[in-house]
Figure 1: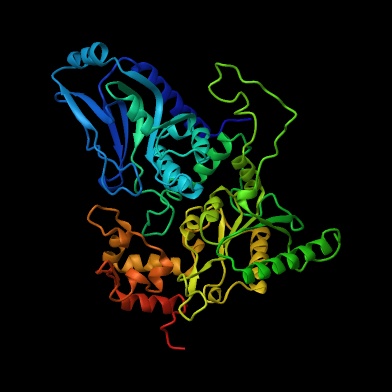
Figure 2: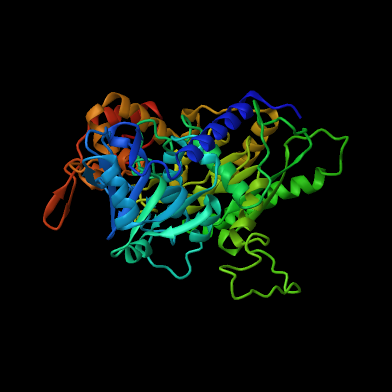
Amino acid sequence: MPTTSSQFEISKHIMNFTHSRLFSRNKILETTIVCVGSSYNQSCLYHNLYYVDSAFMILTVNGSYLPPFSVRTDAFNLWPTTPSTRTFKSYADLEIFVRTVIDPKVIPSVTLHFGQPWHFNIGHALFDGLYPAYVALIRFSPRHLLPFRILAGVDNCNDCWSEDVYGRFAGLGILKHRVLNQMSKGNWFMFEEFVMGSGTMCQRCTQPNFQLPGGVELDASRLFRDRMYQQHGLIHPTVRQKSSSEGRSPRDVLVAYVIDNKRYTAEDRKEIDAAMSEINNYTNSYINKTTEKLLWPLVRVSYLHYNKVAVQKNSSIQINATKTDSRSPTYELIDNNFIAQLKLLRQMDIHITGPGTGQMYQTFLSDGAVSINLGGRLPWGAEKTKRAFASYLEQYMTSGAPYIKGLYYPINERPRGIEKHLVVELIRNASRLILEGFSLPVKPLENLAPDGQLFVEMCEKDKEFCALVTERLPNRMFTCLELWVEDFVHEERQWKLGGFMHNNKTISCAFNHTLLGELRTKYGIKHFQMPT
């Protein structure tokens, strides 16, 4: 098979990268730093970064150039991390100090660092921790294609299976920051290559374009998806270059899954079940009638609880561990529950769910798949009142994955609850789009619901508001950074004129209310205060 130019470029970079590392290893003990991005959104690659007594340490020589190297390691920490610096008069002095005084434990290869406060939730674990750190690593190509190690600032957790995902994804395993802190009391470590700086690229780090950070411009969503499959031992999802219809035929039976969601009411579930029955009955009636013209594409739709997807255990195989095995001898040879979930995602043509954690998995869909967001209803406690409005939450995940197409339950219909005929219509529209062929990549703005598109335009026209909700700076009120588009569009809580009271204090975020009203009309979004 001939080598493509892109493969050659990757191979060339890897050879250059490997050569430079072999050349410099154990030759230069001084810390050197390369940083990418603005000071607000900076990632840094440190060569020979030292660690002692729970603190990063830079060892440098008087006169050596160091760029500004402060970074944010945690999406929810607005203050940067700045390693301490120790300066020597000469390189000889530095070398003597390293070799004879501290004699550090060397951590070889690339280590990627991030903090993650809620890794017990797979959505936060993947897209507020691992994903933004991986975007930082992509900035230092080709390291994102090679095995690396993770240094994770995570809480103590006995059953957080996201830690296993972290270790497999990286390839060289996971170190826990709290363990390193304990081990570093009076002991020095030296990280051969160390990357950190991901604090403004999380899924909850709102961008003016309302996209998952790096998902489009760095192709990070696709790279993240592909590495996730690769590192978990699975063949990559189907690749389609220009159209969703590539490799498909008109009578293919498309695979759809409705993902369970806590926001579905009992009435919603009845309507969803009825819609699934109508779709499946049609498919069953026409699947073998190859000569009859189809009114609708053939779709097989199932209901799925992600937390009930489990790998089948083969109890007949017994492998005994030895005393020297640091982990199970079958660790890389058998599947876990996350791999079982990925196997399902890989074959989905249509992914149907409501807001919340289930939305995160749409990033792992194959090229040319469709994500249908059924939405929810807000505000809490007023879902059945005239104040209710549609809530899609993570639609920026869809706009940040240009290899899939996003569809949404009608925004003005959702406050009445889910209705069968609209679910049927969405599934059939999705299947028709797939087989007729929608163009790839999908334009990000087209993958947003009306309120998401409204936000993008609002950000373009009200710059002060845009900075208030997108720039994660220490002087910003975090309440304004905690943006959900639907709350803003319908002027709830901090977005209400005059704000709301909390602990005898008014909490309010300023913006142009008149402009918002005009944009609601432009995008056809009904608001309970609008005249009927």
